[in-house]
Image (cartoon, rainbow, N blue to C red; front, top):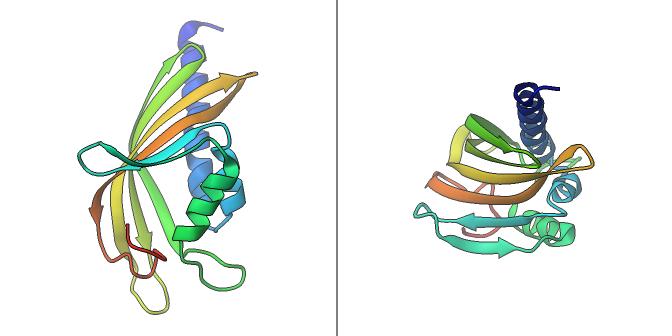
Length: 156
């Protein structure tokens, strides 16, 4: 496989991984979300890019953080959100890669109309282990926040 083809294949696998996250978080499959970050650092920062929260590379810690923050609705419980990833840029370097994506989260419930509740950026790093791309870190930087009252169990 040529270097160019290898890069394209890696970018495709990484985009799939990024989408897998959104397809797991929106239906409330928080254990599976946590498993995506089992071997990675997971943190948050403010608009200035300074990390404010860092969760260690442990799936249980990521699950606890997600389940302790995200309000769920119905049976089965779901957060009633859609995570929209846009403007993704991926850089591949042999067995590692990085990505920067914009994220906008929209939410609608019985009590609130569909609306954007936050926007920010994901700074992701990836490792290729045994031919499979995995998250090695995610830093979420919150840029704008709307009405989070139907989404968050506690204030950001």
